[in-house]
Figure 1 (cartoon, rainbow, N blue to C red):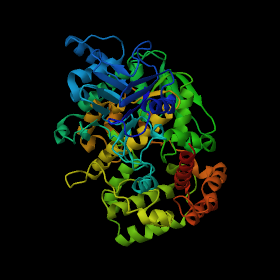
Figure 2 (figure 1 turned 90 degrees about the vertical axis):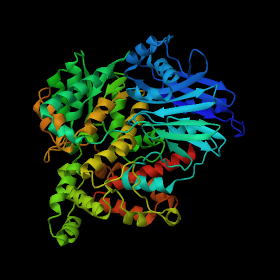
Figure 3 (figure 1 turned 135 degrees about the vertical axis):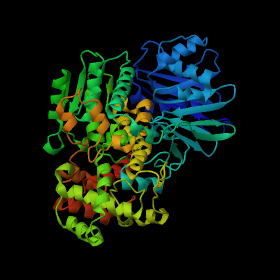
Figure 4 (figure 1 turned 45 degrees about the vertical axis):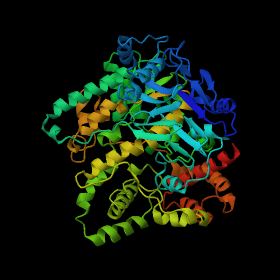
Length: 627
């Protein structure tokens, strides 16, 4: 696991000292690779690398040249099936000088070109420079576990890096993208390829790029399959066993490591399955890690401890104050652009504590998107019955009822009013636009009041431009899941884990996003994922005999934090200092920003998530201006 960066200036007209600039970029990525650093330079091009040593601790130094010296590579990630690919390359006559996956990946590109991407099972972002053709080739893994950002400054300078902050002080276009700003305020994250800056983009998952004298080419190389109706004829038991074998194979590959390894364990279904597979594969002395909350409605630590006891793991639980006010600028610095998922706070602490014991941790990320785990999928099914209510009841009576009742600050699953408001909002969004599936922290009407006049002049209204469009042949829930796989999973969930883990030099591996598991799940008809109102139906069947009853029967519990309480406490003063003290400068209408925090103090509506989005935005903007 590493941090990578590079600069290309063919005509030496950008005015940038490439060697010095890449050294500075590499220094900004030091947290991603605390064990080693490397720099490679040729006239017109420079690569930088920071390394976290996980496999082949004494070799595999980067940037790495192939044996001929024609190709040079920097690489971030893990190729889990590197041993199998290595054997294939050795049979083709390739000889190796190291024992890790880096040289395997480099030679796979030398031998197979872009076709090597079809052979890789792993998480990766890498760049290869062809010194003979003067062409850069870069690629990102199928699901988007590892990041890859790039910018083209005035056509002269091409830059790439693992994180946006590495581009600081380069001659790129850092003007704010108001389309991206709207995405952030509506949904809490920015969808790739966009970033908050007009001049910087993120390579989409399952895409590669080429950059050379002819310009820039970006192309998709893989796409998950659509549901296969013929699978409806197969017995549930047979599909469950196939899924179980696939996940066990995925976990087996992800246990390859030359450093200590453990697993996150929340006590929920997904992380419990990963630990169960580790035990079944005769992994000895399994170490598991969890984090607890003082606020009972948000705390899962007792469930985690129960599952750890069942499997006999060496379990470590951290019950520390989240102290969001202390973490705010740490999060801002490492996420590099506005990022509003507040579960980054406990994820940060979990990674920090886990790194005290191990260098690699397995997680259950990806199961919700693949096997229909989110409650909004269930809500979408319930809307079919809700439509039978009289229109006046749906559009007037129930929304008015939800508006007059206080919702409190507890976790939303403990608040009937919060759940009902989310359900009504989903109905209203879908009625206007069937593709508007994401919960909106700020609606279009909210943004008209929230954003100040200077922003209003340039915004045109954010459109839901997804990589997949709804058509009448697709079930509405299958559409939601596909959009989540293409956008929410890589741009929110995996982004959260990558930045939080790499900030502490921890590598996180997610067996559920093995492309074989993804393809299997995508081919499954919906009935095997959502049966009635039961989520993850086949997944529960596949591991029912491996798990204790609790994870199988428990409702999903998100990794949420009590923002509502915090904005009535320690975050309130920070909000006043960072946001309201700006006297109208920045992006937000200050009267609306003040109304939201006052409403929070009154306790009628829980604006915690909205306030966090605004606070993070202003903290990020202040940091970026001063960094």
